[in-house]
Amino acid sequence: MTPDRGRGGALLPVLAAFALAVVAVGPGRETAVDDDWAYALTVRALLETGTYAPHDWVAANPVFHVVWGGLGSLLLGPSMGALRASTLLLALAGLVAFDRLARDHGLRSDEAALLTASLLAGPLFLRLAFSFMTDVPYLALCLLALLAWSRALGQGSVTFAFAGSLCAAAAILTRQFGVVLIVAFVVATLLRARPLGARLASALVACATALPALAALWQRGFVGSGRPRSLHWLLNDQVKYLSDPALAWEWLWRPAVAFVYLGAMAAPVLVAAVVGRLPSEAIGPGARRRFAVALGALLAALALGWQGLGRPLLLPLLPFSLDVLHGWPRWLLVLLTGQALLAGAALVVILAGHLARNGWRLGEAETLVMLFSGLTLVSTVLFVQYWDRYLLPLVPAALLIAGRALAGQASRRALAAGFAVTALAGVAGVAWVRAELVRGEAIWTASERVVSAGVAREAVLSSWEWGNYNGFFDRFVAQRRPLPATSLVRLQDEVVASWHEVYPARAAAMVGNYPAHPADPDWVVASRVPIRDEFLREQTIYVLLRRKPVP
Image (cartoon, rainbow, N blue to C red; front, side, top):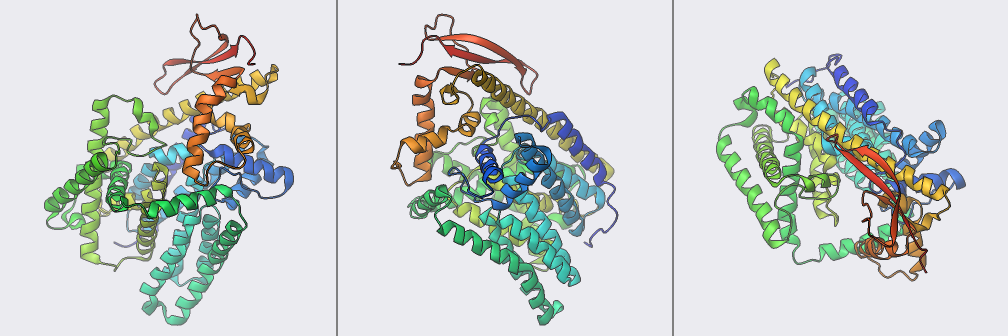
C-alpha cells in the first residue's frame, strides 16, 4: 500500500474530541495521580534550587520530563494542573504524529483517523494523559522520533534525521528504555543501505544517533553518581529477577498478557475490520487454523500464569491503571477478558499473515515501528516490573497491525462501527478519569483545609498521593536510617505497610471515603464533601478528627 499524503482533514474531529475530553475532565484539578507526586516534587526542587535532583521514589531519571514540566509551571504557575497541561500538550503532538505514521503505512486519512481515535480513547492513554507520569510523554516523543526518522529514510533527509534525534534524545532523557530507538534506526538503515547508498546511510546514522547516544551516556554517568537511589535498589531487584528459576514461565506468560491487553486496545479497529469483512489479503490463507492456534496459546499462557505463578485469570491481569475493574461484576470481567483474548489472537493472525507475505520488505515507517515495538516488547518482558502502563508504547503498533485488516479499503459502514466503539470507550474513559480526578481533588482540598485549621501535615492521614507529596516517604526514609532494604520492591512493601499500620495509629485527622462508626470512641466526623463517581452515584469524602490526642 502506498502512503496517503493528503491533508488529513479526517483528523480534525479526533482533535476536537481530544479538546472536548480536556474540557470535560478538567485537567486543572489540584491532585496527583499514581506516582506523579514524586515527579512533581522533583520539578518543585528544580524551580526552587535550580538543581535537578530526582526524588528518591523516582527510578526513571526523567530529566527532560522534569524540565518540560518546569517550563509549564513557569508559564502557568506552579500547580499540579500546570504539570498535567504539559503532558496533554505532548499527548496532542503524539496523536498528530501517530496519524501521520498510520497514513505512511498506506491507510486512508479516515482509516488513520480511526486508529488515532482508538489510541486516544484507550484507557491507558486517556488516563495517563491526565497525569504527570512519564508514560504518555515518552510515547509521544517516540512517535515523533519514528515519524521524523521514517521521513529521513524515505527522502534521504539529514534534516529529518536530526529532528528525529532531538525527539529520541528527549525520549531517552524521559525513560532509559528509549535507547531501543537507536537500535531500531540503525537496523532500519542497514536494511535500506543499498538504495540509500553507503555514504548517505552513514550520514543519516550519524545525524540520527549522535544526540540520543549522548543522552544515553549522560544517563549512564548520572546513575553512576549514585542518584536516583531508587534506581540502584531497582537494579538489585533486576539481578534477582533474572536469576529466578521461574523466569522461563514468566517469559511465556508476559508476552501473552501483552497481546491480550493490546487486543483490547485495538478492539475498535478490529470491529471495523469484522464489519467490513476482513479481506483475504490482510490475513492470508490458513487464517482460521492460525487463529485457533493463537487463541489456544494465549489461553494456555494465562492458565500457566494462574496455576504456576499465582496470576489472575481475568482482567485486570496487571496493576495499576485498570485496577478499577476489581470492583466490576465477575460476569462482565469474563466477557471483557474473552473479548480481549479473541482480539489478541486476531492481532497474531494479522501480523503473521502480513510478515509471511512481505517478510521485512516493508516501508520505512513500518520497519521502524516494528523494530521499535519488538525491542520494546523484549525489554518489557525482561524488566523486573511488569505493569499495564508499560504496555502503552506497544499500543500504536497493535493499532497499525489491526489497521492492516482494513487494507486501505474500509467501507463507510465499517468505519462507522469502529468509530461507534471508539466513542463509547472514550465517553466511558472520560467519565472514569474525571471521577478519579474529582475524588482526588476533593481529598486533596479537604486535607489542605485540615492543615489550615491547625493540624500538622504529618498528622493527617489522607490519600497516598497527598501524603507522599507532603513528605510521608521522605520521613519514612529519614527515620529508618540505615535503610532496612537495598531492594526497591521490599522497601516499597515496607513503606506501604507503615502507611496502613503505623500512620493511622499516629494520625490526628483522616480524610477519605471511610466514615467513622457513630459509636467509635476515637473519631468524630468533622465535615463531609459530596462527590459523584463515574456512574454519577453520590459518594462522600469524610474528614475525621481524633477525639483525644495521641500520647
